[in-house]
Image 1 (spheres, rainbow, N blue to C red):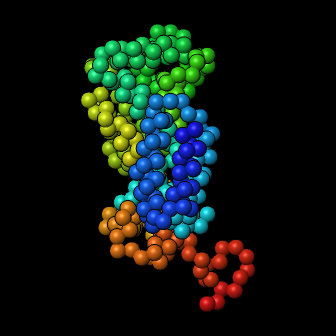
Image 2: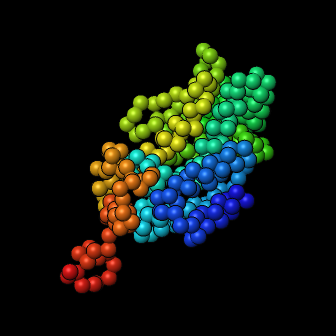
Length: 287
């Protein structure tokens, strides 16, 4: 239901609003995406409607950026300061919300909430491995590893912890992240690599408010790295993404004409319709 509401409001923003294109992008990121993130954190939402929402949002954002359909989707998911539209992928947003919710419950300052969450997690892991889990087993279970005794079906019902396990399994395909157990302090932590060549970061319980931000930054940096690696559309982006001043207009459209806006994003991704670069057919390449 939340996805249908977001899509409806996005369509109204696209076709009925008199806002400028950069204002429409900012409206979706400021008002609609946080509403979806709030719902995803506390409820079980299937991925099928999220995929439909992703497809529609990408189409709308490419329309606002005046990009052709063959333009890379990566540019939509990277931050403003690097030249992107800063809209998260719905699947990634769902996985990050579930992992964040699980981590916040396990590290809650309220001892009663923390104890109930830990007991529920131990029961779910015990059904999977069919023995009393240790702290390391809990970290392995939440990390979504499918090796050894963790590969068999425990027959457990879907719960927050099974969703957190699946969410981390999906995130591990995109970024380097995992749950870890510290025997000295007897606590669960989340370790991740915020950028491809950056040092690993360990999120401790006292840093619980930063886990969502770290995960989002890591996913955005992964998309930015993938776009830079593209031999065609990543050449100009590799240069313009290095300095914030090259992308000052993305958020507010300052000092930018509508004609400039329609040209810039196509030029950066090498998607301009030029006679000298005909990709399909045998057209006349003369000026």
